[in-house]
Length: 140
Length: 144
Image 1 (cartoon, rainbow over the protein chains, first blue to last red):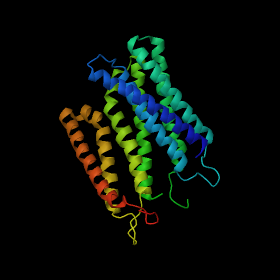
Image 2 (tube, each protein chain N blue to C red):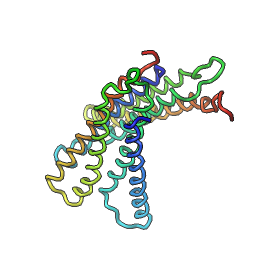
Image 3 (cartoon, rainbow over the protein chains, first blue to last red):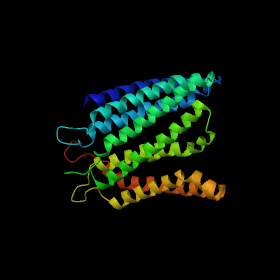
Image 4 (cartoon, chains in turn purple, yellow):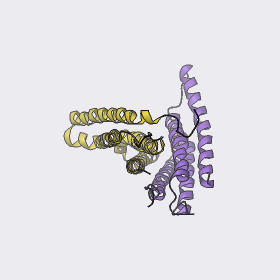
């Protein structure tokens, strides 16, 4: 398993654990009829779907899809690593800033969410660019 | 990788890229408080990422790696799998066009796009299940 895939999968597992704990907390709070900050719900869903599921898909795709060329799995390895960095910095920024901004809105803080959005969208597009040429039939 | 898997995967990646862009715009709205109309993209964001992106990638990989049927039957009834692809992508297109339909033709017409999209999504799932079901079996080489 390539190093980049190991990074993706291990980070995905960390998000799986963290999001499951947060989801469990939200469920317990609802069950006990305690008030739950609504700002935690989008954070939970994005940790689960982007941090765990999407990251797992990215990591496995980089590993299992046909290599770009013999002995060269990626066309642009640096871009694939940049995808990992942008996705995780962007998501972490969101996880920290979104609840904070939701409870105490400040203009400067809000711009960090813009940065998070740019990083996550960039990660998605870089993934598509790096994987596109590897979605191909046999012998091409 | 078979042709249909390439269609599913490339379709899935396009949906993922567009869906993440829609989500990014919504997050920009949350951060800045400007552009409140970005929230109209929320159903398209959720649908494009979950159904268009994640589901299509899963279907594409399933079609590729599930065991083939023996005795020259290959991947079985491929027409069913292709029908699933077209039904799912028409559903995605209808749901994505929902905001534009609402602006251009009004809420009742936009409601029709959701109804048609929902029916097609269900049809896509059923026909893919019918295709994949016989392929979920032990490999011929592996022991039971």
